[in-house]
Length: 468
Image (cartoon, rainbow, N blue to C red; front, side, top):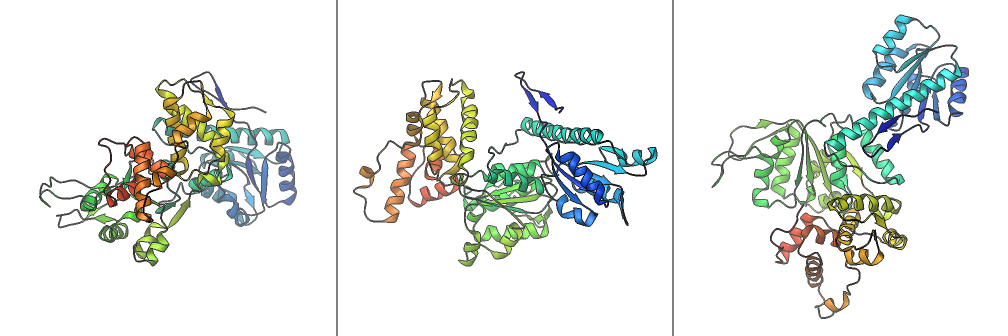
């Protein structure tokens, strides 16, 4: 079997000649059986449909790669289905087969987006070769887009667990959607990475992606930051467009949207409904064209019941929901994540190339309440103190602070949740050297939540500590 190869910088090649998912559409049962047998022998996963209506549910499958389509579907026009398929699923390659072959017909099919054109009765070798080349072309184009996204700094979703494969399929299924998306998941699961992936696969990919941490912005300036203000709107105001207008044409990502105060929720709802914003101090509204993706680790439905979040705003944000599984439910991704983080943080010149077996076993056994963010923090901290070519178990445990006993620190505390919470915050800051990002990862919470808790307990952060 032939394969596609892309040369990479190190002399390594990229290959993809694996079997694919193929949908066969023909109203003749004998033809369907023959095509299925030919392609099943190659290892492809084939499905059959005898009409366009029967094919429709299968065409929505984000894993579908090639369609073999008969032009004569009884009363239905195969050309119409070809056009609709290339409009709705442009990444899917279509191989047309027909019993009435002609040069004008072939040219018309190619012009409408078909990969190739086969005449009946078809040669089994030609069918195999054509489907194989269609698969390779699709995968080559997809890989080119991935490389372009990497050059633009787009994130990669690491992991091959079923949960991660389902997440990628979910993201791919939304690539033509303009609907608002609500991303849910525990702190540290990578909600911003998913939001960026949604943006990169959307029609707005060439425009700006603007992230906003709703919990980190002080309430006094939140609305001005989001919606903008006019010169003189308040003391010292010099005029600013606001992040809604900055993101116009692209995507606005509202991280930790559950932290928005009531007044900002009202204005956000109006902006989403009317597709316009009115800057502070302005007399007229300004139209905006953007897609909003929101994320939260909180239960917004419960917050609605408690009166802390507007139900009408939730309906506007939760048009499409994307859920991210916690790391403890996809432990099979941990080895790949570890290698990814070692490579990422070893770029500064550290000689570490991997981890010892017992160290990897320890990593896979942990529950990681801070999820991927906590795992990355431990790897980065361990790399900072590593002395050999591979991370050892002792390096990792130092990175997590697992060797420090907690009992002595809390023995004299009063029996109060607030006291224990304050001690946990103080200890995390001490062990993180005042680095807020690391402290948040240790505690398994988002940075915005940590800032809020620090403010509640009157705990300072180190000047210049990382919030990124």
